[in-house]
Image 1 (cartoon, rainbow over the protein chains, first blue to last red):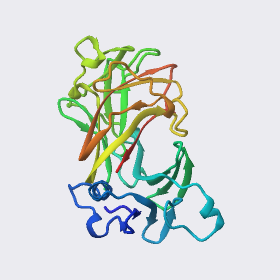
Image 2 (tube, rainbow over the protein chains, first blue to last red; image 1 turned 30 degrees about the vertical axis):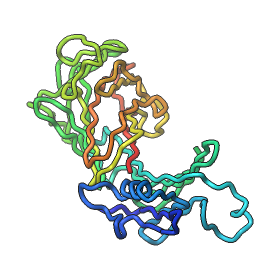
Image 3 (cartoon, rainbow over the protein chains, first blue to last red; image 1 turned 180 degrees about the vertical axis):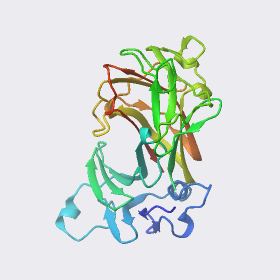
Length: 136
Length: 182
């Protein structure tokens, strides 16, 4: 099953790449789209300048960007993240036995890492698109 | 699709189904009681119809003896000597794609609040190779599992043991696993 929440990454060469599009589709048994993105960045010497999540290709959830931002003073003066990351979190109760996508907690997470180590995370629930922001 | 599968290992493995329960029991076997302050002598899978699903599979049991020792059927041994197949629980995480898994944690809680310890139960857990048990009660005290590189299937072998602190059924006692994958 394809995940409903997917990443969108803009790169330092101006490219914007989408999970489940082009070379970043899930292929059974092969590296995940994110792992392939990391390899691509390494091969080309590129960096992620902004990252977002989309739910069902409708809503988009952005982190503060190191690249383009909305044209407001608050964005132009806000601290810029120095790097970005993406991962998925899955959790479930063992006592309930086998856990599948119907009963487990499944979230996609993007994070912006700031100088000094502060991290802002956006968590999006793969079931319903509900979103939380954390500072860790 | 990402999935967890929990198995009680034995001569044959018993997959713990969606409506099943993992049962820590006494020396008399399925449905027998564990004495207060003692640890489980047998471990079973109990179905929603109260049947012993692991009957005939010679299910593994891991009994906490001290912080660094356990009995898994061969007498008291150092915990770090337990083999994969001797751990009671096998947790499998799989995904269609090859993913790396990190920051996996495993713990007991009250079934409601992840930071809350289970009520009336002392719970111990260890990953195969650990030299000491972790009193894994509440997410802040969770057992941390080893990171694993990219693969479509990831197995974790976990020794588990539980002890009642008082008489009676322990309903505020759930086990939970959380992990990161990408």
